[in-house]
Image (cartoon, rainbow, N blue to C red):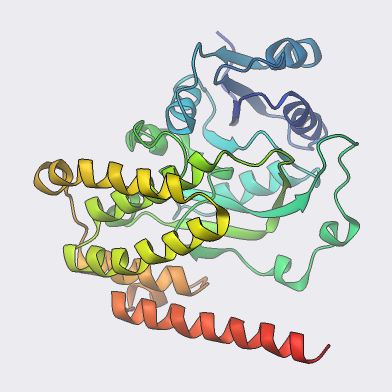
Length: 339
């Protein structure tokens, strides 16, 4: 058996041969080298495995004979890892800074109060054909990128670091959240125990905008999984208020994005699962957890005492969201009229 490493880098692969090779190239340029790479292939048919093992024969490559989805795939990857830390990466990100890994591990070593540390994910356009070039203006760190790490309500699964022992103790992701929104379920299971998520603006991953659009089924699954997690874990009144906002919001997004059929199918799947969920599966968190949840969704703070002192309710949260929406609309109108 290979010796344990400080870090296991866990990557899902599915028909992204070129993107995955570019990610591995960027990992090979990192100053931190005490890591292993574990790739779980969800049934690629584009020669990904052959190309990767030809270029990087040392990686641990696990082939699945069918696509089990992202939640199950990440769980399999974690179960086959040996590092103290697990770093989950999407297969179409690039680590442009050679100190990205060392920075994440350093932060993890220095901060004992976290369950997951997330990098800031910078999205950039890519045509899928030419050499990947990250725009120069994105490579320059803005003043915001030098801000300290802040407590977050969530984690970015395409660029997040866990202690392996913590992740396995949580039993990882719920497999039935096959694709899209699986982070919601895990986040709701972490918060009641006092677990904290940290986001670090000065650690950045660069994520390509796929030249091939996600299948519209993804949008429906993400909406469905988000709603199911809220109905399972939120206090009932909070869940009902949240759904009263989310269902029409998602319907408008479906109309604009032309995935109305997937929206209707997602609603149908939610209704089919609703009786069992409400009668047998609900494990609502406390009001105190929800107050922290709402505060973290609307504030970026490095002092967790402010989070613990929060009295924010679901109505306060949506009033805050509406005010933010009105301010953003005002800024857009100001820019348009000034042209």
